[in-house]
Length: 382
Image (tube, rainbow, N blue to C red; front, side):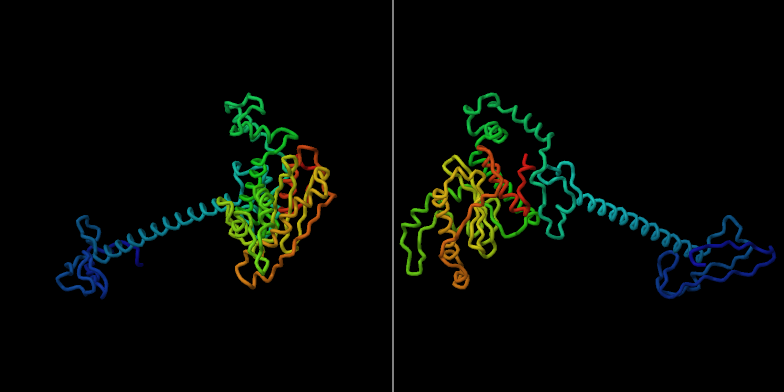
């Protein structure tokens, strides 16, 4: 058989029947690697040897057997190489499967109270999965201790709050961790930036991909510049008024620079969330619905702003938002979808009230829960 060699035993010392002489088929290679593709010549043939001489120690191996041995060695080497390839392939596939399994699980360093320790559904979403995390999950005590230990390294740690510099990290966190302490603009904006980054990184966690989060500067600028808007003369189409600085950047979604959405109001954005600092004494939140031409005001302490004062607070947004949609429209067809008539608003009275000092926290949670598509729960609010 090809690939094997079998020794023949001589039957008798007198039996001198010569063995068959080896020949090479066309296209084959000679024993010494030459004369490929030629038939054997007489000079290549060895002398006739008796059969019983096969047991002699000084007998040269038959060329056909050498060729078979070489073929067998080549086949064996190929089989070993194939076996090594298959082994490496199986190891690589096993590694890929292991990595795939690992990516579907949150590592310990990825688990946090903001994600409620959820698993693959957050990382590999295949459909709408909001809410993507629990906004009322308890704080991780281990992380809270790490924060406290880190704050102790601050040189202003033991200085009273009213004497701490505003650039001190202990000033920022002491206010945040003190019950009923007034949240400054920087605290409010920090949380809005958290929502922005979460929304930018994992939009599937939110109830819609057509929303926009604004920090307190938007409301502050629009309220401050509203008089210039009213005093400016419009053209015959009612346009040409002076909008607050940066209005186009908000409209086109190019601000903030670190988390640009590049989504256009009305075209790509339906819901806009705004925070308003009222006289440095009270925080309220607004949900602007562009399709409904309607604004909802979430006020956790309604007695802090009278209805008449609230009308004054809301007037810049009721008039300038619809004007912005018309003025900044990129075409006449798009402009025709909007009108300059002012929006309407309401302040619901059936929302959960807060204690004085907690309005900032409640305001942020109203926005977060509404964006997640879940009901605000005072019971679960820590």
